[in-house]
Length: 104
Image (cartoon, rainbow, N blue to C red):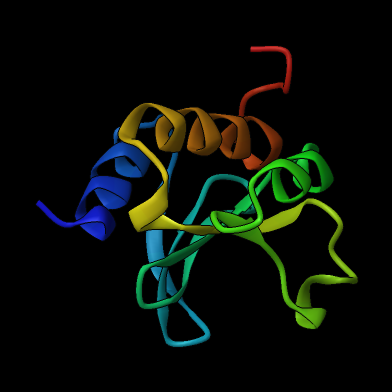
């Protein structure tokens, strides 16, 4: 199974998540955007730890000037993150974007 398929399966398994295109790429929404394929093998998620993630592992986590205005968005190179960490990132992004309160 591809990393994108893993992302799709995990996201759609969360309550209230739907998939639609955003900027001609697959994206998953709860109340707001929670994840989107940015480029081949690169995923956008929301994380309040963006600076820490990119600071400790810039080969995996980064952002572009496009993302400067959205301080929660971080890009993830899917081939450099293990499935467990990816699922944690997606769950955190869901909590920030989703229909459930962030404390859930």
